[in-house]
Image 1 (cartoon, rainbow, N blue to C red):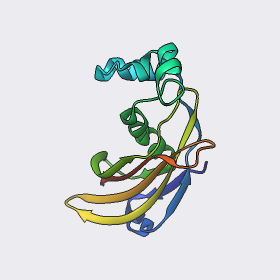
Image 2 (image 1 turned 180 degrees about the vertical axis):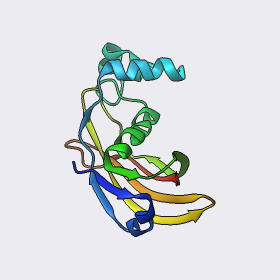
Image 3 (image 1 turned 90 degrees about the vertical axis):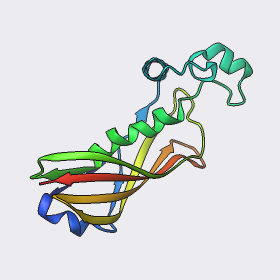
Length: 152
């Protein structure tokens, strides 16, 4: 993984830039359980490994789709560093698809491509095409278009 570092004044130059891939991160059962506690979603396909292995169509426990999506924040900060900003804001998402499940024990990483850079009052908004893949998978786990704002 290589972090792209830019000055705030150069953000507009990132339009079309592929920032590459983040580092791999293993999704372990503890992370899944902590997320389940945080969002109060204890569905057995996530939190009961023995039952999930015996009964689920996935062959074992899987991460919540929103857990995988939430990792975009972590991965994003690995891929882009902007100097000279007073605030960085996760502004939202335009589109999200949970394409394939992430089994507990799998490793995931994210690619980010800057699709657009737009002026907003006091700063810039970056529209970012994000793909979270599972190591060895044939389809991505999550594809999303994220919106991030940077203020001077």
